Image (cartoon, rainbow, N blue to C red):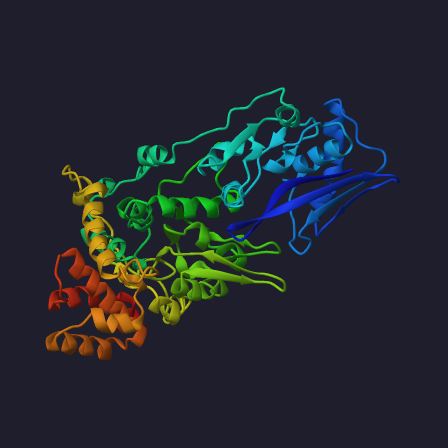
Length: 512
C-alpha cells in the first residue's frame, strides 16, 4: 500500500514542500531514498522505539520511504513524525483520509514526545501558498507558525496526539494569533535607553545622524570611554520595525534556529555582536546546507563589531560586498542561495594597542610605527564603506555625576523617523532604496547638489585628506542626512562641514 505525507525542506529563507511516499511490501529492510542525510536515515531507530512504546508495531517487512523531489537535499530530524505516520498508514495501523491535507513536521524522542524544529515560519508561509489546510507541528513551535493566518496550526505534544487527531478521537483547536495586536503591544520596547548615557553629546549626535540615514559608523577611543554602551543603545533610536520587516527578520532567525521555544514575531530590531574570533562562514553564512550568518541575523538591525582590528583580515574583507549589495549570495555546486543582509554596521576600536594614542591625559606607550600597523589591520576599502568616523573621548567626573537627565531614546527616535519620512518620499519611485545610505553614485549627483562654496570646501578637504571617490560620495550622503534632520531642502555649508568632520581616520593626525 502506498501512502503519501507532506513535509518541507528549507533552502535559504524559503521552503519547498517535500512529498514523503511510504510503501510497505514483501521483503526485509528499511530504505530511505531521495537525497536524505544521515539524521533522516537514523530516524528508523527513533520511529521504531516510539511506535513500540506507544503500542504500535514496526512492520517486519520491506519499508521504502521516498522523499521527493529527489534533487533537493533533505537534512535534519524534523521528518520523523511524517515518516512515522506514513508507516502507520501504509501498514494499516492508522485509519484516516486526511494525511494529504496537512504539512507535518516534528522530531521524535524515543518515547514518542515531540521536540521543536527549525524554519517553521517559512514552512507555514509555503504551506498556505500551496493551499494546505493546516500544519501539524510540535507545541513549542506553534506560536511561530500561528503568525501566518488562513492556515490551521495544530500543536501536538507527542505522536499519539497526532494519531488521535487524524482518527477523530482528539479534536484539537487550531492555534490563532492576532499578529497585529502582538506586534503593537511588544514593538519598540528596548531595555537600553540613551537617557542612561551621561555626556558624549557629540557621539549621540553622530549616532542620530547614522540612524536617520542608515549610515555605518566606526567609533575610535580609549578603553572605558563608552563605545559599547553607546552602540547597544542604537537600535532604540532606529525607526520602529514595520510588520513586513518583522516577518522578514523573524523568518531568518527561524531558519537559523535562534527564536527559541514558544517564540512568535520579533518586534524589535536585532542587535548582533559576534566575538572577534568568528570565522568567515559564521559571519556571512554558508556551510554544506547554507545557513544565515551574523550579517543576515542582523538584517533590519545593527551588527556591532567590537575591537575591529582584532578580527581576522579575511573576515572583514568578505563583508565588503554585502555592505554594498545588502544581500549575501552563497553559491554551491548545485544551488545558489540569497540571504538578505540590510544592516547597519557599528564598529569600535582602540586607537592603538595600548589604547591611549591621542588621549587628552594619558600617555601612549606604543613604539614607533606600532599605531600605523594597528590601524592598517582595517583595510582602506572597508573604511571607505563606513560613512562616519567618530572619536570617543572619556567622560569627565563632572559629567558622570551630573543630575540632569539626558535626552531619551524616544525623543531622538521621533527626529530620526521624521528624517526617514522625508527619505521615503524622496525614494518612493525606487522601492529597493529606503535611506540616504543606499543611494547609488548617479543618484548622489542628482540629489546631493552643493553650491560653489560647498564645492570649494569639499575640494580642499579631499586634497588635504586624500579621500577616495567613494569617500566623496559618503560625505555627500551624510550631508544630505544632516540636512534632512535639520528640515532643510538643500545642503548648506554647515551640513557639509559637519559631514567632513566625521572622517577622523582620513586625517593626518591618524596617519602615523
